[in-house]
Image 1 (tube, rainbow, N blue to C red):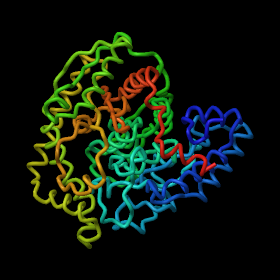
Image 2 (cartoon, rainbow, N blue to C red; image 1 turned 90 degrees about the vertical axis):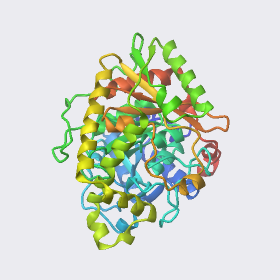
Image 3 (cartoon, rainbow, N blue to C red; image 1 turned 90 degrees about the horizontal axis):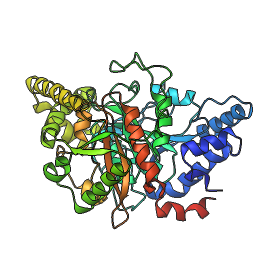
Image 4 (cartoon, helix red, strand yellow; image 1 turned 120 degrees about the vertical axis):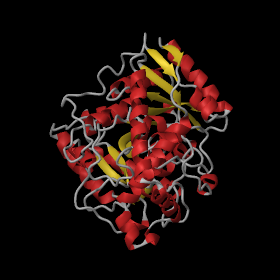
Length: 473
């Protein structure tokens, strides 16, 4: 049998349902892989091995008695360490919160528990999802399993590395300006920033109340859809939460294809606004050709310049995170890492007038983005540019507000998904973004599934992780 940890969520779920494998052996194999590999990758801040084993035994009893909760029952997963977990440390990778142990679970965690998923532990991240790659914190920097000298992308860095290395079958990250899509791109995964309001943020340590989204990272599109089915729910505790029908199913229509769709291609973002390298451009040409073979009609379309989105976002985000943690800064500025302190300081120089003007500009940019979906079924552009950068380079980078190709779709609250479309000559992943209308997450997943069925990039596993199999088993 294929090594259990290399199964997709949907494959493992079917075997669990049929009794061909048990949650206990699936969980034990993941814990063994974590023990064997995490010393090199540093994906986890906290491994909840005891809890995972107890949850796996309970899942096994339930499944054996015919009480299956759904497709995630018995599936091991990990959480970015800004999701509150009752009794388990939740630090957001910040020394300011290193002793923090919440009393209750975040809404997302509660929903995954109810679905029968098994929490393996908490993943490393950028400090408060904002501090960038920093070597000055108490914990080591996560490393990319495709090349351990490379960055896995952030701020959900440990989550991306853990799923790519098959240490977690899926993960929940957060995305403020690309923090799910970046690690998905650099680690060869699927990462979805859902529509604003679809997934509750209650119990999540916030970065920006205007832009924060919770979203899944997984190896396949179908796995992302299964996770979405478990975590999309209205939550009165989150003022941004939107109501959806109780019977919404993101796997419905997943395999219906995109024949006849009109797809808008935003080329200027990666050709002129922030020019990408030749490998990214070649990957995009090949991906567009695949979409055409699937029956889509591709048309070029323009949006506002990338720098306009970046400036608008930073003007809103900087004061919001400073206000969120002002009480900690008031007690001790040294509680946070040096990079995070420098970023937070920028928020002091942004006036209320600047902030309100940026919010007004955001509404205008959002209206313009939504209007595009009167013409297009889907929009595509490049994902975060490969190859993944060297950790030494990003650790030395102190510039905070340069334009990123993920930001336009964070600012405008539309669903955006990053998926692997190939590899560089050095064996590092390349990515594409697919974007849909607000609450059109199912449409984005359907298009991404069409692409994955036609290709096999998502079936690759990092060589270092396969070579460790004999050690683990």
